[in-house]
Image (cartoon, rainbow, N blue to C red; front, side, top):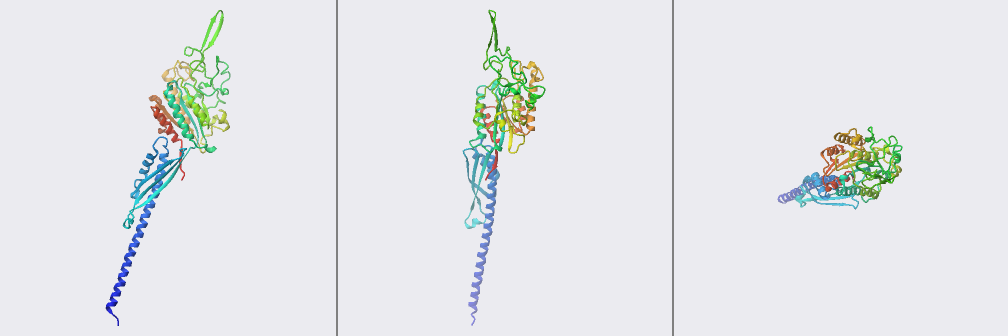
Length: 460
């Protein structure tokens, strides 16, 4: 016989089991959905952290020589990540290899859960890694550096140290890069003339040397500025020759003494660092080279003499980078077909123009434009002649930039408002001009240029 009470109890038990199963099912479904949501949020946060770490590494790596790397990474990481989806960065590890060419970054953190916290999981760990390779692209770089008399002493010492540091930054301690990415550096010391090296007699006009009295010495290698507009062009010597720089014996350079005794005439030559036909001719240029030690030796050999013709330094820097001069310089430049064509793939061209003073010309220093009274700038008026020299500098800078030569400029020890304005306009872009009133600022300028010349890419 059917027991209604017993049957009712069984029905209630079955119904209770179904309800319990439904409740557990809902909990499981809710947990699964919550887990999916939290995992999805963690994946988004991890992807954001990875891209932010790449960006921070690239930005900080571009200032490796001038800033604290960890501080810079954190600054950019905080800006780009900024507690994304309630996540927190707990640790950042940064290492740089011995050549300063590879930066490895690791970032770790957590993201707060939304649903999983009800199951005892309040955070999910996230992390990212990045590797930044600082690869020096192929580069032809010429440093056009002020070697005038005002640079004597500590100023020249600071310049030598800063320029040498830049060379070390660019070369690093890594082995040479591929041929199509080689680093070539040249040096153009300038004062009131530029010394192209005394081996280039084929660049000179006929009788340019033989027509002059050199006393007990010979031509050192300085040349006069060409005239009729050719002083601001890259016309090669095969098309337009130069005159040998020569400072004759006069009241400002008394190096020839003639005496007569007992009817016999004797000529005496006093030739030293401050007297003679090569007076104030600076150190010879250093042709583009991939030999780090020889470049450093040339920098260390610079001597401060003479007046300031910045345009002469700039135009010779351009000529060392101009493909129109290929085959003229000799040595490794000829054997490596340098300078390369403008816009050669994987190769950049750059010039650094540094000075501590305004352009000058007067009647007591006979430079590449001779004395002021000779009017070889186009005027015998001091103010007008300096204006002409300033215009020549602007013309040369414009020509270089028009040929995609990257131009950096440095004004050292407050050189004067006129030349500072010229240097600012001469630079490829505003932040490529560096105002360096102190030696520390000069060093910083060269380090920043070194960073600028290092191209960056994310390698992993």
